[in-house]
Length: 70
Image (tube, rainbow, N blue to C red; front, side, top):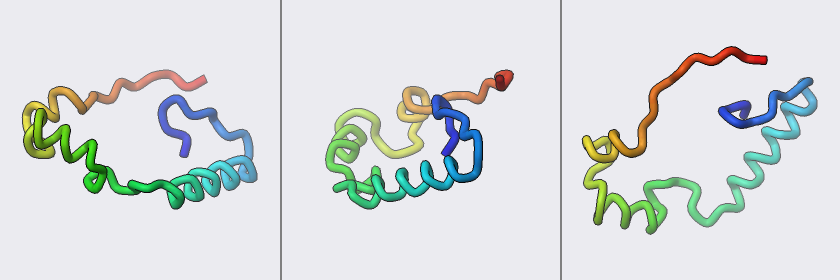
């Protein structure tokens, strides 16, 4: 809740409703854990190798850049 690209909630009620909606959506997903998703398993097997390998880190990870909030 409130991660990058998310609207900044203006009050506690909006925060609560947003969190409830996110958890409700998550519960309805076929694959709730990325390591159980056949597409992700295939990408690692065929291209990236092991999780946290050099290649996966190089392509999938980012670095934090502090930015001013407005």
